[in-house]
Length: 48
Image 1: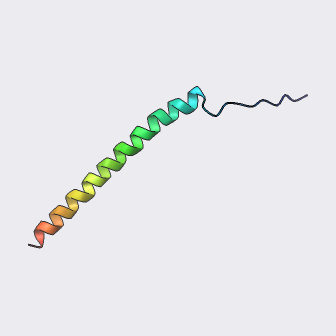
Image 2 (image 1 turned 120 degrees about the vertical axis):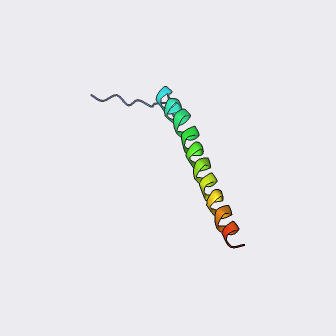
Image 3 (image 1 turned 90 degrees about the vertical axis):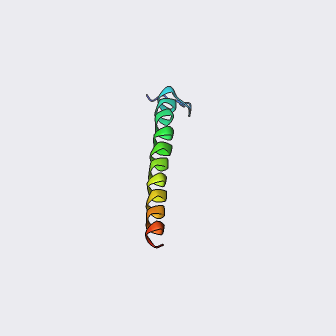
């Protein structure tokens, strides 16, 4: 005897995981972007 249950899309676990993942990914992306910009400016200054 099986009972079909429909679970809500937004659960407490979903909100907790995405609440941590979204800022972490944006933080890592901003750090990598800053490193890329810093390398580009160093390379361009060396060519002068």
